[in-house]
Length: 279
Length: 277
Image (cartoon, rainbow over the protein chains, first blue to last red):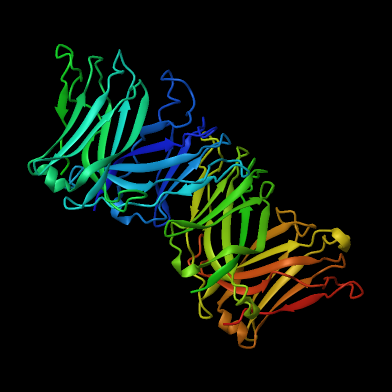
């Protein structure tokens, strides 16, 4: 049992005309007929005084919701439990959606875990019935184990608002497992303030979290001197090479970054930091 | 198990200010992560009024045994907030319906939320928990009459100002007699739906009605009335949300008959066919 006391919603909008929306995103979590969680997510772009209003085409949102009134048991979730809806008629075309939970401290292993996920979504959403569905189901995914074979990695990053915390420098994610480099990916876009990013990353060869814990590491590096201070970094391992995963393994989860600034200018920060590996 | 390929939605709005809405109502039914139904209902029903709609064949039938308490949700597609008090979803299989089998699926009663796309007004959707269809031995303590009066069309003045009366006999015993007249709803107006809950004077079972009993609907005046759709259910609880709802009468098509005490215009009373099984 994992008693979920915090929830994050991540969503990537399709990169096509009018896919974005200025409406709020309504999430409900139902267990045995009772809504144990409900929240209207802004997903970052409508936050007062933070960034321009409106979700743009192709943009990602990553937001921590208000905590549930009482922790809920993730073991009791079913494929019918989680639904995502839109609170208006500015139609939205999501591409991928992920619900992440944080278990109460007594749950081991892994305090942060994926709860539900949909990928390659085809439907549009809108309160206007001519434009799309009012709500859609988000099926649950397993949290996997330390021996789940990981064939793809999902990197979610959110940079908050702050004094020059964004960067135009490239970054790199590397994963070493059993002494071998399993993933080595450079990301070349800017990391603007109040912006989230969603990246599916291919691996060199499949591995497990246990392989990473044993003679391995997860390294996040910056490749330039434009210093960067991310806010949230999630690294998940997916058990499928493509399409919707069955298991989403938490490799590293840093909801509130406390590893300092990143920069190749060592007077400003560290060029590379090892990310904590989840249990 | 029942393969559901026809669905009905019924609700009674709370009788409070602004409970009614002209926003489109959205009903979803999910089975193991797949929406087997996503239907919109244009209701435009006022405060304290009732709604009954359905009867069309679903594009994809589903097995009622696969539903869970998280499967059924009702929502609103606009910001004219809606406050239903009681909501019932029921269905039937066209193939099985020759035998009159109607399957109550989900119900909530005593709802208090206003639904709206406007987050400041209320939730976007609410869940409807499953209810059991009961059996012929389920003890019935209340009766729910759902009736829709014929819309006008070729039929003229289909509504009535006359009172009607429902009687239920279990064997030879009269267990319910309820006159319906001048309630808070728009009673028996043309193209209007009504939701009437009645207490059974004596608890009974459908089996007892089938064993020599009957269910009789009467009109008590000469203002002729033409129902269009009529369902009667038995509820196992004396108040609040039921655990079991038993189908007693199912008339998705009432037929050609009018009702009136003036026998030149119609029948003063009708023995309704009781659901078998």
